[in-house]
Image (tube, rainbow, N blue to C red; front, side):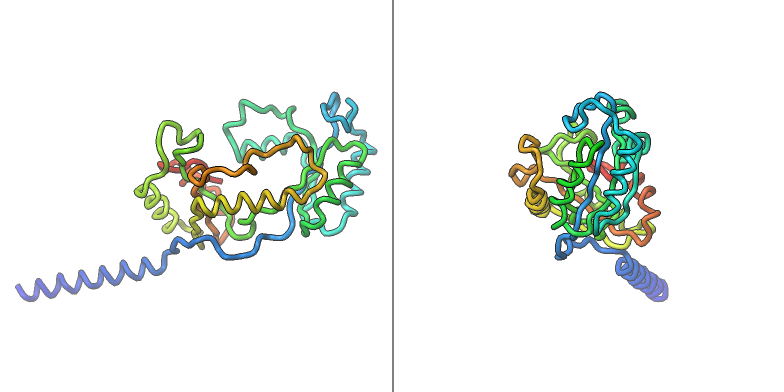
Amino acid sequence: MLRVFLALATITVLLLCSSAAEANRLPGVLPPPDDPWPEGGNFSVFLCEEDDAWDACGDKEVTPEQRRAVEQRLREMPRLADFHYQDRVEAWMAMIEEAPELRELIQVTDLPDGFHSRLLRWSDAAAFESAAKALPGVSNAYVIPASFWTGKADISITLCNADRGQELCEGRGGATTTERMAIEALLKRTKGVKRIYFADRAHAMWLNKQFAARWSQVTDRDPQDKNDDAEPRPLEQYPETYHVKLNDPRFAKSIVDAVKGLPGVAQAG
């Protein structure tokens, strides 16, 4: 009997050690990093279409000569990266991949052609936007600050929030502790996950204020183009979000597909 007891005790100790070793190997859930906001931003320069509603177009479609001139001028501007042209079909496909629910609401013809790139310095944003809007054949241009999570995470998983309308969360409350634990367990054991961050509502509020402050530095903005998200809201209306850094971004789609179906998840991408 003593031998049986000792054998069971040995097995128990081995199992506990194995579980502890596995737990140490799995990534933990960290608070958002105390890093500075990334420098730079992103821009889109859209081209005029026939019967375009923008005043700059005068109901005239961009000519091939104007398109080439716009591209040349943009390429000459300093401190740009990842410059590329995107036609309306490519823009529509990218939008549907990010938000499949828009497939039936927005047609390919609703989207304009345009040039896109990254600004390496946010201090160039206002001058760039003003110069781009002045080019013949350009309907409009937008410059937005880089996201705080640029370079820090590859996937974001927004949780259901009882105080905001979210399609996947309709008719239920916010994500429960049990649902969060299930999400974290899946992420911890998923191949390719390097780090997991949890951003609470206070962090989301801080992000919102910081982003709005940076965007307000772009001087040539339509004063009637008001962003509701820039307005202060009660803390409980801000979302809770997991941000995930991967060892290899190629794992992103499979992880997003796995997480999307979990209870308590409002959006993943």
